[in-house]
Image (tube, rainbow, N blue to C red; front, side, top):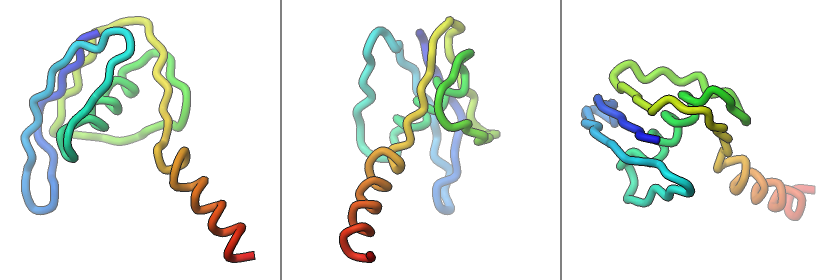
Amino acid sequence: MKVGLRGSLAYGNKKVGIDIEFEAVGATSLVGPNLTGKSLALWCIYSSARRRFGRVIKRELPDVVCEVEPGDYYAVYVDAYRVAVQLFELAVRENFFI
């Protein structure tokens, strides 16, 4: 599936330009430094899916055009906070704040 994002986002008091295009085939890995669009690309794929599982994302990005090649695919949203940090916080809370 072809994925493309174009536009700009506000970051602090600056505008960051976005121009990303890639082909997601099989198991695709997105690797790069912070603020390069990895999470944005995943959000784009998830929001374009016909069948979604996980938390509903209601995020509007008025200055970003998200283009995902139509297809019949499943998208699963996994919140990194809930998977990693929240479990750690619960473990700490149980051990130190009983």
